Amino acid sequence: MNFNNLLNQVLGAVQQSGNKMMSDNNPLNSFGGGALIGGLAAMLLKKGGTKSLLKAGSAAALGMMAYQAYQNWQGGRQNSTSTVAALPEAAFAAQGQLAEERSRVILRTMIAAAASDGLIDETEKQLIAQEGGADAEVQQWLANEYARPASINELAEAVGGDQALAAEAYLAARAVCGDLVRGEIAFLSRLSQALGLDDGLVEQLERQLELA
Image (cartoon, rainbow, N blue to C red; front, side, top):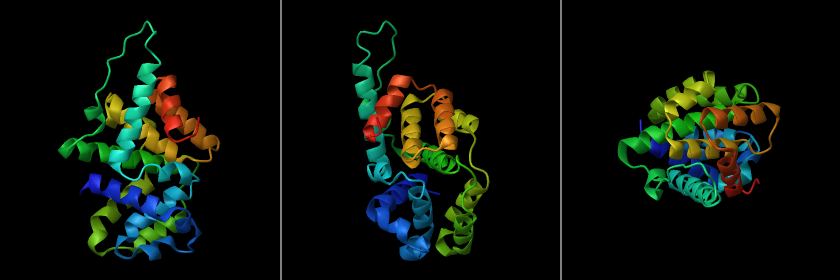
């Protein structure tokens, strides 16, 4: 399964559809052959992060936003006594198999963020379950993630200390959690700590989404 392509399709569907998707009675029906992609995009938009999600229309755009946040954070640390190795722009633009692995982690993080305020809507699960055909592999993967979203520890383990990926994953999660509720606040706080993100970097990531 091509996770990088799936992430790009989901982010692209979000960007193209925006608020219209949220107003559909059955958002999956408006995507034709891309119903599964539309279903995930619609679920993410329902969380209230429309404006934030619209800023990231592709995996590349997400990586660039994370890089810009990282650069701004590094610039603000010039007078700091602690040393943190600077990451090049290439660290935020993975290619090949590394891009696949990163996209899978980011997708899992987004679904976990969507589920952080409680169970994912059962209607959404049923709509996904009704779709099949060429998207059977994607359908099964999504069904598994919906049934058991990744835990904070699992996400941190998957990131494995990769600070570029950690920044991108947090950025994606924060974009999903637009209008914060108690569960989402706790999720994001625990996620940033588990990923080892500095508070200043977290602030810069939120600035990229115009949330700080």
